[in-house]
Amino acid sequence: MRTVRAAPAGLAGDDGRTAGRPEPATLEAMVAALEEDIVLGRLHPRERLIEEDLITRFGATRHLARQALIELDRMGLIERIPNRGAQVRSYTVDEVEQLYVLRGLLEAEAARLIALPMPADDLAELKDLQAAHDMAIAAGDVAAIFRANLAFHRKLFSCCRNVFLSDAITAAAQRAHGIRFLVLTAPHEREAARQEHHAMIAAIEALDSDLLVDLCRNHLPASKAAYLRAFGQVPRDSL
Image 1 (spheres, rainbow, N blue to C red):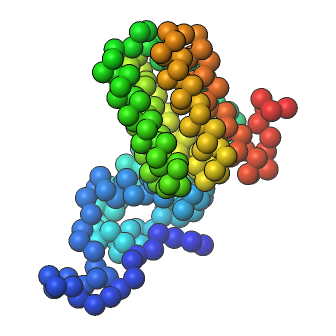
Image 2 (tube, rainbow, N blue to C red):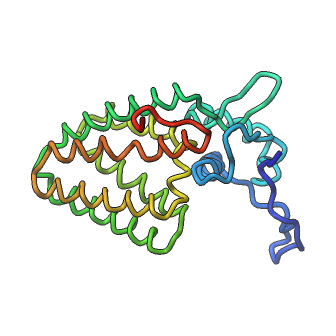
């Protein structure tokens, strides 16, 4: 069984610290690193996260390691099972279907609420964020693609001007991190997502709210389908 491993040990550095004992990470940094491990497929569904490994890897206290697991559980990325510890969350077919129904409803409604024409500053920021996404895809930097994709969608849906709706979208998207890793690692899927982002920007510039809603709704099924196929299931909307 694969677990979270520490960096290799080494010689003491100029500041006297041992290379195998990293400077303690903050809670935020630990959660971000483990979130990235899950969304990039370095940690797989049902793979265990062991406190001792986290302590060694991040130079953390046991309390901080436990707090990181609590936060990942709150985000829906892992599940803590009594007497068995923490593991990366896996989803049943019904759970995947239900989560993506929710995401579709939330994101389509947010897109519908985006007032067009979009303010020039918001549109310029959205284009800048997509330029960063383009560069990450061109470089094949999967971690950067993940972060740039999140930033693009957070900015887009924040333009609905309903903070509760945009927060709900972020929370639902976090729960899908362990589902979307397959599309992030597939070059053709990454390119398809990039083109869809540009189509969203074009719809905004064309003042076509209906098209923007359709594009946002249709942007979701690829990650769901890839996850279900990988686990021997065919999504219902593909039948």
